[in-house]
Every structure is written in structure tokens, then in C-alpha cells.
Image (cartoon, rainbow, N blue to C red; front, side, top):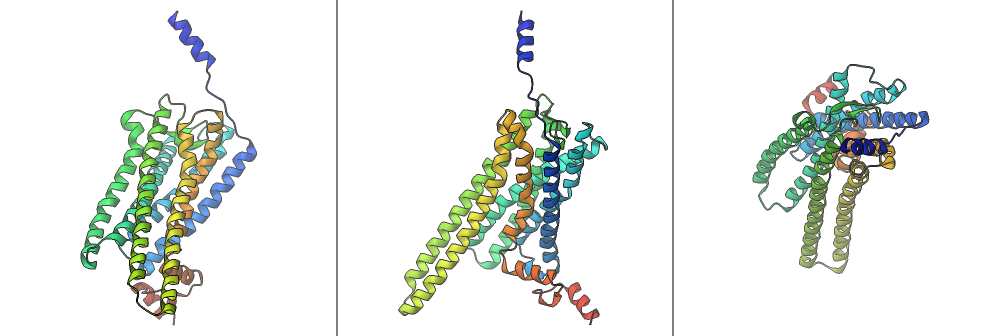
Length: 340
């Protein structure tokens, strides 16, 4: 009797069959290609800028470089996802299984690392603004903090990718449902791994970013109010200073708001998809994944191009005008001397 009931339940609730048209597959491939090209160029510029300009080699920019490295690896990993998408014609991964497993693990590690690095950038900005230490001690503190933070970020990211193998919750590799190198959704415990990743990669970093951005804005607003209360200049000078303070406050607010908005837009849909079941959720996964990967090419715009020194170096590189690079590296100076 129990066997019959179990059989009826299992046969009455078959797993939903969802397919994507050829046009949808092509659209996904085109989007991934555009993200890959943009991400390689943008993140490559960030890394190259720090290499050729000593002014950018600050402790704070270590986080920016780490973010660029992880995002660059993510975009360099996209070709394997494109191969997986195009392989849906025969329903199997055309290359070695180890390569798809490696691509899946690399994706989890780099996306996790990118998300936690953004949270660390928010923490770093809060510390740098609110710290009451003198400059020398603050730099020493931040340098040691960065080393510990980077070890933590990479270690936890590798651990997240190792969860399926360590605890038998899912299996990294080719997924026939989505034609992707992620984790096999046909595994009986695949949904457990999806929930684990959703919990680990969204609430904690999101809360950290929100709290840090709020505290940074509160500190800046409090500081500007103190400065305005201490001004004893003429009316015109007061008005000029007030306008400058307002512009600074507005600019900082915009940057912080941009960080939060991009984080929410790119990560929230994918996280919700991991937690929600059903045909609609399954159908939306490839597109929410595109948003998630899109974050890898948007990060250079958020964290680098708003920095005046990064802007200068970017323009100098694009115009091949090395002499305008601030505080050029020694080997760049040699190249310039030899080309005279």
C-alpha cells in the first residue's frame, strides 16, 4: 500500500520540462559575448592602470584590483559557458567532463569573491573615513586588514565551491536542463546547494554594504554640518563653501547609491530564482544569470572610473599618451626615453 502511494505521488508530480528556443539561445550567447568583451577590456584597464601608475598603488586600491582580477577571470570563463549553451543540440557536454567541472567551480569561486570584495570595499571606505587614527597607523592597520580580508575572501569562496564535494549536496559540472557548466540540477540534492549559495552570497554582503554606506553618509553629513557651523567668513564665502559641501555630499551619496542599486539589480533576481521553484523560475534562470555576470563588467565603471586618477590613466592609455600618466612606473619612463 505504501509503495503504491509513493508511486502515485512520484508519478503525479513529474519534474517540469522547460525548453528554450534557438532564438533565446542565440540571444544568451550574444549577451555573454558582449559582457565578456566589455569585462575583459574594463577589468584589464583597471589592472593595467595600477601596474603603470604608482599613484594608484594604494592600500585601498588593493580591493579594487582584487575585484578586477576576479571579474576578469569570470569573463574569461564565459567561453566555456558559450560552448555549453551551443552544445544543447546533442544534449551533452562536448569536451572533457573535468573542464566543465573546472569552469563551474571557477565561476562559483570568482562570483563569490567578487561579491565579498564589494562588501570589503564598503567596509574599507567606512574605516578610512571614520578612523580617528593618525595617517601612519591607519595605513599600517589597513594594510594588515587587507591581507587578512583577502585570505578570508578567497578561502571562503573556494569553500563555497567545494560544498557539493564535501557534503554531498549537489554536483558541479554540466547541467542538461540549462546547458551550462554550473551544477547538475538533476542531482537529488541540487536544490539544497542552490539554497545554501543564495543564503551565503546575498543577505550578509547586502547587509554589510547597506550598513556601511549608511554609516559613511551619516559620517560625511555630520562632518559637513560641523564644518558649516564653524565657518565665520563673509556671506559670499559662506555661500560658496556651502555649495561646495553640498556638491561633495551629493557626489558621495550618488556613488554609494550606485553601489547599492547595481548590487541589488544584478544579484537579487538570481538569488530569488535559486529560492523559488516552478516553471517561471526555471525559465528565468538564464536571464537572471546574465544579470549576475553583467556585474563583472559594471564593477570597473563603479569603482574605478569615478576615481580621478583612474580616469586620467584610462584616458592616457586610450590615447597612447604615456607622459600624462601620473607618477609613471619606472619601466614606463624607460619606454618613453627609448622612443625619443
